[in-house]
Length: 126
Image 1 (cartoon, rainbow, N blue to C red):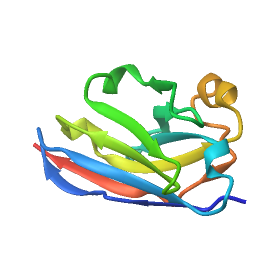
Image 2: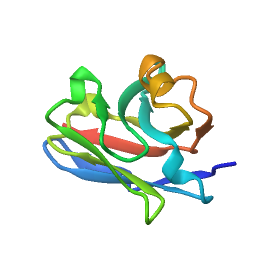
Image 3: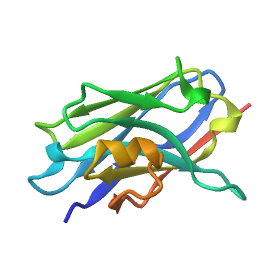
Image 4: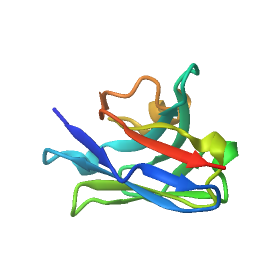
């Protein structure tokens, strides 16, 4: 069992930066691929980024390439999402997800992840 708790969301202006954190419980965090997805009002949840269990591989949605960076610290059981040059269209609830397999995390773009956090709201004003 893995419990995920996101933090770091808030209200910012366009062009600002935010760093989201996702703290995981349990001693098996380092064996999971981790991802971030987001859901805007009235829209389906969409994939943002993922990172393999050891951090060697990352995978991004096209719309965040060059702006967002995913990273993890297995010693702290935490995964991060650094978001730069934020746009109003980045406004959404951001969810952290854990998947036992990197292959399914990337194939399914996080939608079939084993565990989910509660989400943290990010609002970007223009």
